[in-house]
Length: 141
Image (cartoon, rainbow, N blue to C red; front, side):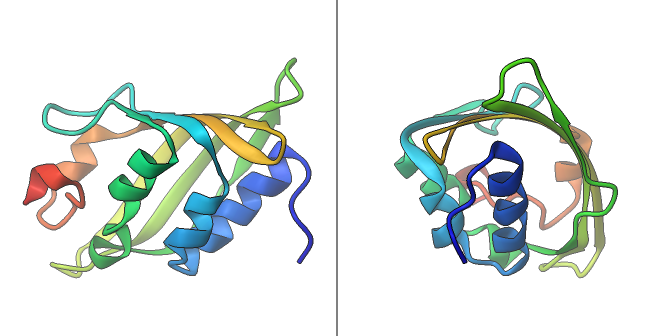
């Protein structure tokens, strides 16, 4: 596959990588100085990750805890900045530890420059992480 060229193409590709549990390839889509933010993160969860290595550390154990199956209702909106998109989506799957269903709604604001994610603000529902087995961060260990 050729490298995704637009923010929309890169984002769709990133979702396929998450479904494939290919976290290393997902992290490779990030700029070295990319920033991931979680404005609604509950206490004990990170609110800001600075740099590709911090994003990689955060995502390292994701597939061991969350088994994603699909991203239905994906809507990608263009903005007045051609490098920035706004994404509405649901992530459905299961929590590995308990086999409980996962159905989370997200809104993300994503900026892609020179083929890499430079900014990702993830507005997800913090109530969903109250479920046993949902915490894949260091705070859950």
